[in-house]
Length: 370
View 1: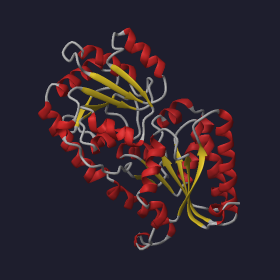
View 2: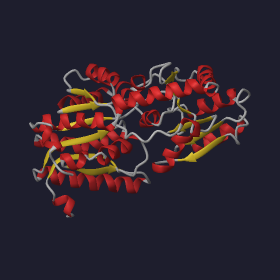
View 3: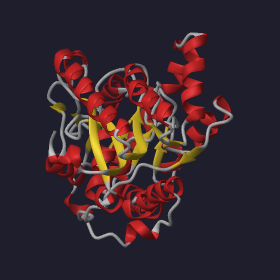
View 4: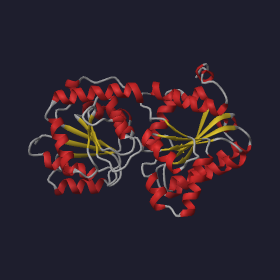
């Protein structure tokens, strides 16, 4: 057993591998990089990773064995589980049930953008009862917005639900004048749920008014489908499919782009929207999930109904044609992130949850030296 396995863990966190593509790993990396792991004595176990089925299965089994060994050894005071929907729920259930049996408090941290559909429309009655049991027995259920809290509290009346926004680290603001003049940026999985094809269609509709406009699309998923759609619409030279981007490469895109666009059909609270706002970008998105708590229509950007390509095109054209409007909305977005979503604001809320479950004051974490 490794040195990490022998180390007593006050809090054990379970989720996807830190190098995995997607919003959950982005959130967990901010928690780690902000010093929360060191201050609170958190150890992390991966239950999932990118790649083929054999690697995913091996990661889940090894993670479960490590987690169960710690639980049986009495070395876990709180189990914090990051959960999405469908396969993620079933995978995390295997980690949660032993903790329940041993009386270890469990935090269910819900990220799944499609969890409402999974629970209400896709699950049979017995599965819904099981989901309700898990959520109502958990010591805390963390959701990403007040809107999600209202739904979870209604669906699971006995659950102890708290809303904690996703945290972002504030970068230095780039000079407004250094941005490209007409470049749209999309970050996320290409496919129907994120509205990627809707955005390509909207790009075609504004091409006549903005012939030099470009669309940068950073993400995995149906990349070939996006490429075919762009070619069909005559946009092959204006739509750049960049693959998954992260780290410094992503930050360069956020610093250079003109407008950030995410026309999703459902969401939790997308990290990409918060990152775009922290970089001073105006945002065009949809009023789904926690997005309306980040973007107020007409203030930090625009919100359009999912699938409304006419309105999406109109909002994009308005922003591309008005530099002063872009500047005002970008500045408003940065101010909102500083006030509500920055790591300095959000991380103490996690410490409050841990302290309450551990029966301690939050200052015990602040007094620890990383």
